[in-house]
Amino acid sequence: MLNSDTASRPAVRPVPTTGPAPAARWSRARWLLLFATCIVIALDGLDVSMVGVALPSIGKDLGLQAGALQWIVSGYVLGYGSLLLLGGRLADLLGRRTVLLVALSVFTVASLAGGLSMDAGLLIASRFVKGVAAAFTAPAAFSLITTNFEEGPERNKAISIFTTFAASGFSLGLIMSGLMTSLSWRWTFLFSVPLAILALVLGFFFVPKDARERGAGHDVVGAILLAAGMLLLVYTVVSAPGAGWGSLPTVLGFVVAGALLTAFVILELRVRHPLIRFGIFRVAAVLRANLTAITLFGSYVSFQFVLTLYLQDVLGWSPLGMALALLPTGLVVVTSAPFADRLIDRFGPTVLIIVGLGSLSAGYLLFLRLGTAPVYWLDVLPPVVLLGIGFGIGFPAIQVQATTGVHDDEQGLAAGLVQTSAQVGGALALAVTTALIAGGPAAGGGHDPAGLAEQLAHYRPGLYLSAGLALAGLLIAALPRRRRLAVQPG
Image 1 (cartoon, rainbow, N blue to C red):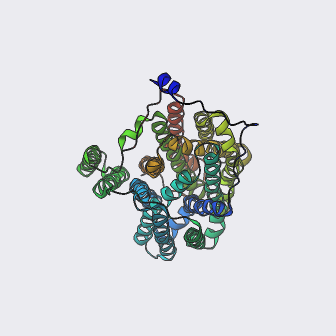
Image 2: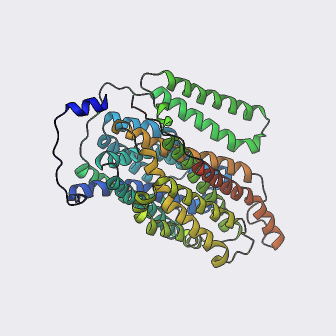
Image 3: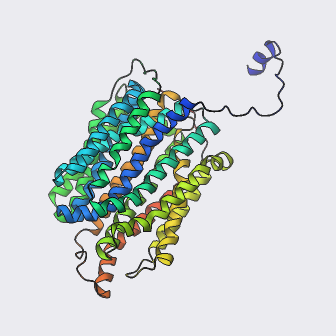
């Protein structure tokens, strides 16, 4: 048929060329659109790193133990992870500009409320609301890039800049958290407010209106089932050490959480307008990208939580000293991420994901040497640099792989999926880490070598978990390729 059709067509004279066409120069409006979305993702990186370093100070001020402290992180990632899919889908349905501006306004108010809260419950609630808002801003911002920049080198360049800002936010958050926490941990929440306002102004003037998808529905029931199932699952894991793994509340919690998540899957397979169209996972690259996102983000959230508590609460490092210790990770990511698009164009995202997760695995394994009197230049800096290299090349490659070959009307879904995988991975890994280190010796309970060794042994399972997750991601990324299946939207 192809040969017959081709033969029946009139000959088309080829247009003479002198080489590949030069890439079109981006207009000022396009750069400002990219800048607005970059500030949005920088706020996410800023929030994660600033809060992580401030946790010990928050705990001392509000009288919170590790099990309660983790909810300051988990409240955000659960709100984020459980509603990202709905956020990505609503961005496709209602318009990315509308969703971005409304959610960014909520994010700004929640940041202000967190910084002014006087109660632990209110602080955690503000973190959850902030995570919910981010669940709408992040996929809207990312899908604005994937729908306004053509797939290939142009989109790879835009995503590379986008991830550089994410890394810059993380890096800036590390150093600013040390400075802000030295004044008061409240400033670690208030610092985001003016940046969010700037993103709002830029978004209002420079993010173009986009067409809404017509005739589609909103899977609100699916979003509720997913959010409820994830919240109950994480709460049960965190509560299990105190209640007992075989106790009725723990067993019942796992059963109900499993039932909610199973109901979610069944609903998605039957509902007319699903929150997740599971057929998208028939693209092997999309499936791998989501699995590796779980391991990459989950391993680092677990690692930062354990290391922050150990260095500050046990060894007595100051918040600024802790921030400076981890700062090279952000700096390496910032300096390497701008070149990621060229590396992706040359080697493909899979190779970079393998190298990135290999570097992360090596960094976590080196951290297992950590002792009671670490020498920074020998025990901390080398693995910190390896973590930065791993993120700098691995994270943007996962983002590219997760959206390659996906139709424009599902870019919001694809962007939401990979970010959901990352946040859900972080929430579950953090819950398991909290369960592993719960009930150990009191931090600061003994500064003699034997007491410090006992406390280090108490925190070490969290480091094992980080290394194990990264190695699992490396294995997934390195598995032999399968033939890619074509997937049509709808």
